[in-house]
Image (cartoon, rainbow, N blue to C red; front, side, top):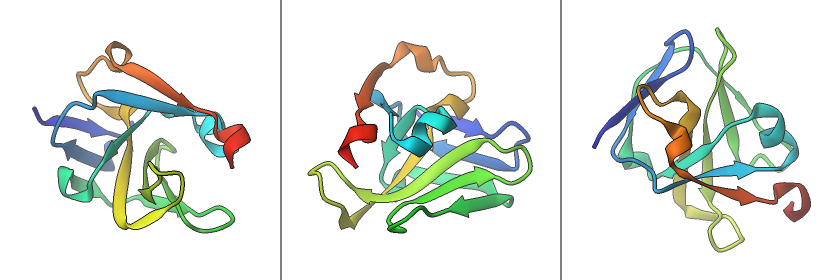
Length: 121
């Protein structure tokens, strides 16, 4: 089932290939301020229809690219290596979509997994 989503002003529009089984709430310093619920995808499972107003932020180690819309300010997606084993796997990149931006979708119906990013990194 393809899910469409966009930022508030629709400058960033995307489709993902499937409904995520869970979303992640991270408590690290930036995620807790951004308020996203993150859904993890392989790059091949995400199609950007438009991404013309993307701005990016890379913090400290520059391992993750944190993207947001420069027009409306919505936190849109991140570009990261796979961290599922604890260390960054650069051979397995991920697109981490803010599931709060999914159109016509009840993100509250999905299980939320919390990462204690405040104390892990």
